[in-house]
Length: 311
Image (cartoon, rainbow, N blue to C red; front, side):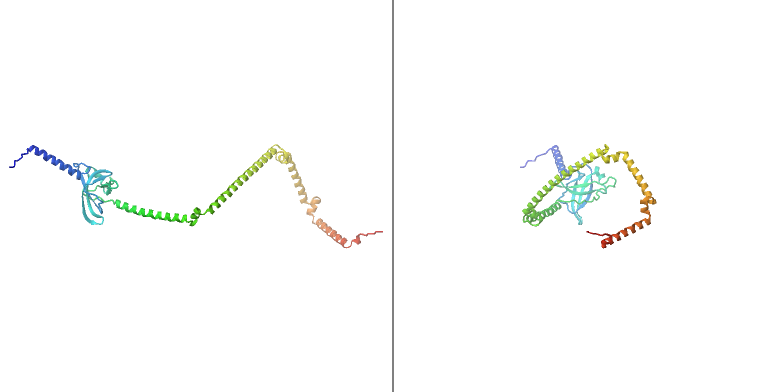
């Protein structure tokens, strides 16, 4: 015969309270995220083409701070860019940061971590988005696009490695100018000879430079000595520069020459007559002509002018 067990009402009330507390804690852990379940929140909606593994209850961040959670994820298929509807909440105390130019985007915690929804704050001077209003989605790159870009990079790197391999093979085979530089010893010997010639040329240039320097120093010394002698009134040049008597003599001689030239121009004296008198010029010219005729006649008939007798 079964025996009934009576549970006191006081113990039953305690069990009910504990059960309610456990259920509340479980509900808060799955739906409340890192925010308080007692804090008032404002709901919003956005649309994405791919949830990329986002789940209901995922955290919602605002400027890197957790401010809410994702409430629901549903397929709506409005168009190619709005296949999935995401409903999420934000603390009501931060509602003023969700303005008309705000946006949301999907993010990943770590490289392979959980997904979250990030709210990008808008300008504070713009109107607020109404509760349950639409917040535009900001497309963000995911791991698949990263892997696709990485694959393209690997293809490019592989092609570059193949080109380098082909290039080094051609160089080792001695093809092209660079290949000849690496494989042909003749060019090395020619370069060695050229360097030796350049070394000799540089040595000659240095020696010539030394000789030129010595010549310049010698000329400079001579000029210095000449300058010293000129300054000390030694020699003709020194006297010309520093002795006023030489200048006065030259000035006096110049004056006399000017006087003589003036007389010649006026026709005074023999020189003046020679320069200015045309008749004297004609007479001298006629005399020269007669003398030339006389000399010619003597050469033709010397006996006419000279008589020779032995006895």
